[in-house]
Image (tube, rainbow, N blue to C red; front, side, top):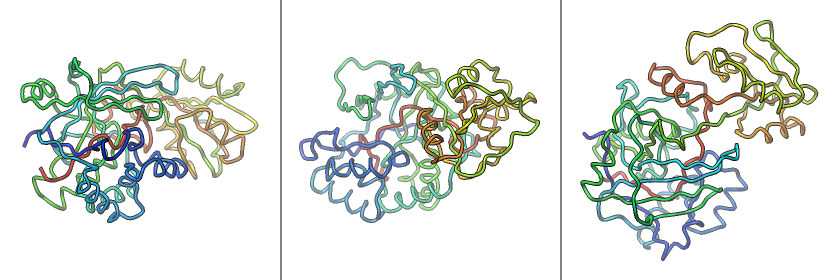
Length: 376
């Protein structure tokens, strides 16, 4: 069975559904309650009603109804899609990430074809599995890294273009067999999951339950590890419980605020973990004294994992972390450096996994552009 395959996408017909800007959403796991309400109010057909339903069977029922009404239409020819995402990151820099949307053969991690880079939360995976059982459709893609080249530019207007949260996504359909072959040439395992571990795990478990050819692939966006727009930002930790004491394992240096701490953190060697600890009355830079031989153990998040933090939540934004501490919503914030793409790939290929929420590949993939029913 082929590793990469085209698919007949199910997608919105904007003539019936309305403007695409009112129909798309971020991935379900980053949508706040208020944002979910805003998206649901934007259109009765917004994808939020499928990817984060209160009732899984209701999502399946909507999917059938929208298809019968012509709100969703099925592509006649199998295709892969070139994707381009233009965005401004949390660092204020404008970038463009390029990739390819296709079906990828599902493989258990032990096969070495698709590899995870971080641990998952079992409850989130179970939720995605329940949704797959009900809808029998892959509603959101997984982001995968590969070693090949970025797909060639398509010299025509895109079939789909939408702006969401200051990210403009463009999609070009490639349905000619020669164009498909050229686009997927050079894509080879192992593929590393960048984002969507819970989605991949749920799809794999669903396929193991069904055991059919129709469920044997997952929809994915494939991005070259060499793509200039591929960017990882850190995921900082907020702690609501007690702050552990930093014992003699760390060199602790007081700094004048998070800004100075992060500047000094960025200048440190990456041969050992370090982080900035923000509390209401003090900010310190903490460096692990011992050097680490293993790539995983050199990550900042690995040191925090050893501290066994209590009541942890996550944010990629320094300002949000500072505000949570100053307002008392968090007792402390631990600010870290992001792993590099090379570190992610090295650790995954060594069969290791980082702690949960170690990376924040930005931007998150927009949901609602293409769906992949499990019937091919």
